[in-house]
Image (cartoon, rainbow, N blue to C red; front, side):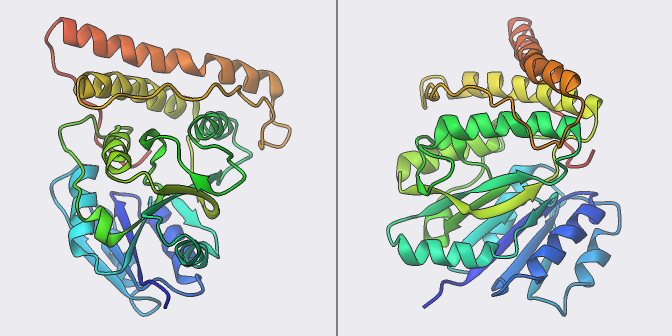
Length: 304
């Protein structure tokens, strides 16, 4: 018997992107058992977009006015009722066989409690998007045995709720923490990922479970995202000190080849190798704030 799949989406002021995501879900075969949309304080036409899909699949809309991904994700987990909870971001598009691949995985892997799927670049012609995706590929290679084959993940650090699936009986035992760095590019995924992995390491990477993600589309966005990502990483390390250790990932070289289809190779190379500087600056900012006993905060926004 196939498990029933609840799809959980958190969104805020990104109705156009959400619409693309919902189209990809309505085209699934089989369709999801239900789609739970948690509107985290939108002021645009998000509800109207959701209402337009009501006749195309089972869809439930809820408004969560406590802004922040941990609150929104926890609200979705409370509402969902399927056997499996599949998480996807509002700026992602699911591959047409996404639901089918999820059900196939759990049919074959009876002891699996969860899946981390593969993420492709939705805008491969954009140079800034290509840089971010190159680092995603490196990060993936550091935390899974083989990015081309299914297998158990090597660390909870690779858990990414842009494309993550868990048995409801497992994930409902946990809550996203609102005490860790969260916001535009927080690390609430990594924090809960470490707890999930510690509780049960039968979490698999499955490259057949695919979504397409819209990475940064501008230089400003690329720099700002990575700055705050570095800040969040450093804050998370301070938060985790003494409780969970962040494992040293495998050494994996950056693959200089890009899917950006003959974009300006010189600019791509420059951005690719200067990218860590933005993250390091964010880490230094965190260190300085802590030395001065000043609290910082990552901007809470889901939109560009």
